[in-house]
Amino acid sequence: MCGAIFSRKEKNMIKIWIALNAIIWILIFSIHEPYEGVENNNYKKPIKNIEELLSSLHGVESSYRLSPPPGDNGKSIGPYQIQWAYWKDSNVPGEYGDVRNKEYAEKVVLAYWKRYAPIALDNLDFEKLARCHNSGPRWRDKYSKTDSYWNKVRVQLDKKTKKMAEG
Image (cartoon, rainbow, N blue to C red; front, side):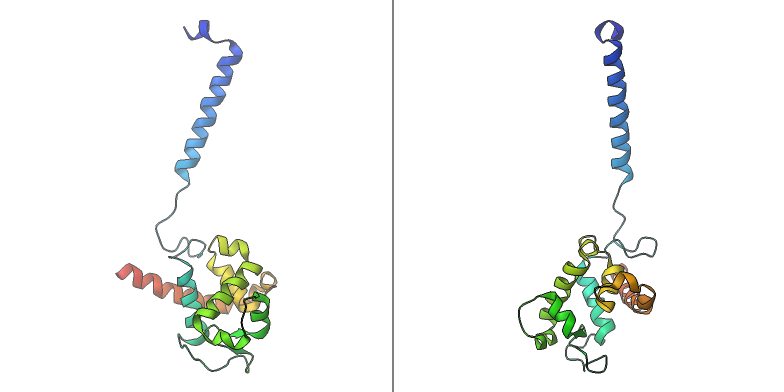
């Protein structure tokens, strides 16, 4: 019956359409979000949200203190230990001393990432964002110099993941 209704060309088009639909469905079902947590120890999937990373950076930079002493021989200030050039590059209105305020400093960090690591920010790639925060606009050229920093951030993220898993 099929032979009488459809021409050879139409039969081939139907076969192609069926095959393409099968491929699309296979792709749809093979692409899935993993459980909330770490995927293969590479923090490319968000543990929860950007606040988790900001909190981990705060822990690494100033041991969660809201008024830490200046770091980097007086060049970095505030809970996220932000230097003047970093603040200036963020283009967030205000004064440099405002980075001593945690909420303002977070706006600076996010604006900085938006400028220098926009894809990593869109993808919540915590590793790249942490490296950018630590080494600046040319962070991609300094991977080996930021390994130690990333490992410290990863330890903080692991602690948060463990706390979340425990309840």
